[in-house]
Amino acid sequence: MSGGGGGVAGGGGGSPNNTEWRFNQTLRNVQGMLKGRSFPGKVLLTRRSEPLSPPEYSPRYENDRDEYEQNEGSQEGKGQASGNTADSMSAKKSNPPSTSSTNSLPDAQGLVSGARATDSARIAKFTNELSRPAVILDKLRELSWSGVPPYMRPNIWRLLLGYAPPNADRREGVLTRKRLEYVECVSQYYDIPDTERSDEEINMLRQIAVDCPRTVPDVTFFQHPQIQKSLERILYTWAIRHPASGYVQGINDLLTPFLVVFLSEHLEGNMDTWSMEKLSPQDVSNIEADCYWCLSKFLDGMQDHYTFAQPGIQRLVFRLKELVHRIDEPVSKHMEEQGLDFLQFAFRWFNCLMIREIPFHLVTRLWDTYLAEGDYLPDFLVYISASFLLTWSDKLKKLDFQEMVMFLQHLPTRNWAHHELEMVLSRAYMWHTMFKSSPSHLAS
Image (cartoon, rainbow, N blue to C red; front, top):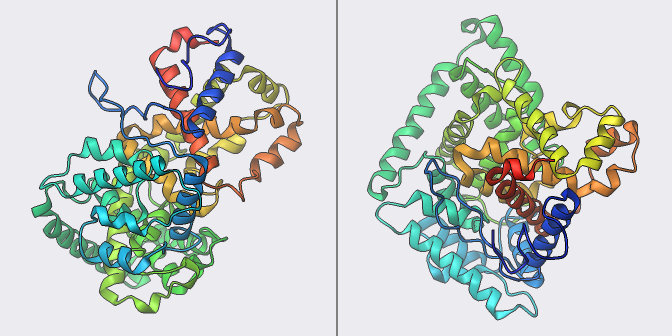
């Protein structure tokens, strides 16, 4: 691995076989990235024996990160409009994004011109990919790994998940057909009297009705009666159509990023000011259908995470414990000595895919990376979780069992911004590269 921040396995006056040295070297590399030095992109994981060239990863200077946070934060959780909302939103709803859409990104005071040019270049690359007669999905994944412009997310997420076809001339027809199919499913499974449901289906519907008000309780928008009804309708229809797992608590959380992204195509301004009354019944139906099919596609690659006893999640928790031991043995040993089982905190992380652990306005950015990973997401989730946990490595080593349990259940992420999330993802990428390519060399 190469980069201006220093090599992973050489230089710096330390032995590459020393775990602590490797950990510190990793942090130095990340810090170098955040200062604007060169840093390699996320290597796209594919089924090919040879990796593709690194994707676009455009590290920003600190003030450029502030600009991105202002724009992104206003799009998710703290609002859906940025700088020149009229131009960006009208372009978003009617035409494919063009390079002129970069004007909707507000300039932060003191913005470094090189960083601004880098962002403009990335948006131009997204625009170029989306304007092709047939989108090259591998390239789109490379670009998307390090973040998707918010107003492009709906189209890009549909493509990354395989819901919308790469061929532009087929896209509208496929979406129309799948949206009609969803309406038929709702009519067949949801819009029926309880007398036509089995006892098991009635109990499942009741559980979903109980869980919907608990979905992202910190975001008041999700408590809107119409949103609650949409959540219930999508979740129940999905569960009936996926009898191997049925409904499992936590899947309600996984629906929320899709709901916010597809609503953003129709509603402007701050999410707290969104009004469902502005949506036509057809709009609501299309949004629900897109959420349903994207959720289905997303969960196809992790079905055993939500079947009986959730063996897929238990497997990821075991791998997380093993990985943390290899990366930071002192923390691992301390947790073991205190009798803390990884299942006590990490099960929720994997079950809800970190949605409950970070501020909601960062979730869609995190999910850009999730969707870019594709079928390899479960594997990469282990590295994201290790990076997330070891953010508090020093703190954890000072806590006893009860203190650790309380700390890990209420992590201090309320004030996190994109800076902290990018650190987590960058460490995860580097550790994935280190440990997957040289597992025996790096083993403790």
